[in-house]
Image (tube, rainbow, N blue to C red; front, side, top):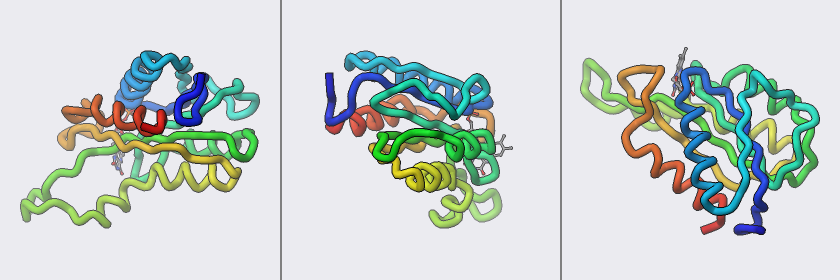
Length: 168
Ligand SMILES: Cc1cc2nc3c(=O)[nH]c(=O)nc-3n(C[C@H](O)[C@H](O)[C@H](O)COP(=O)(O)O)c2cc1C
């Protein structure tokens, strides 16, 4: 069965440290499997970038540490051996923005982006392999704590990601 050009077998690789990205992955699996897909979730610590199972779509998800995708994720996508044209989707988890304590103002967008380079970093490695991106998603944890929990309404964000993958 195909949805918007995406087949049903999906392999998802994430590098969640505190469990927020793992929750996002589980929600993604729940929604996608509700649409008839099969999603296998792997943490990077038990995955090798070589000899990945065949899939119609690969999903990569990374936390953001000091503005970047984790070292593990960068290494993983760099070493991946998948043919050009292989479809992928990517998600990053980030800290939600909070107003500056002194001025009460929200940081400007370009300042926020400097600390949110996760997705472009993953894209750079995968595009260099000729892989083809179908969707991306940014999910945020509450600004009060770097370890989470996820911001209210995060499930809606996952739903939008799923819809984009399904081409709706
Ligand atoms: C050491 C450290 C540095 C972090 N740096 C950033 C950052 O630069 N930008 C950002 O948006 N979030 C940053 N965070 C928050 C992470 O984005 C957050 O912990 C992560 O998304 C949670 O996902 P996980 O539970 O799947 O690990 C940082 C967190 C830690 C622990």
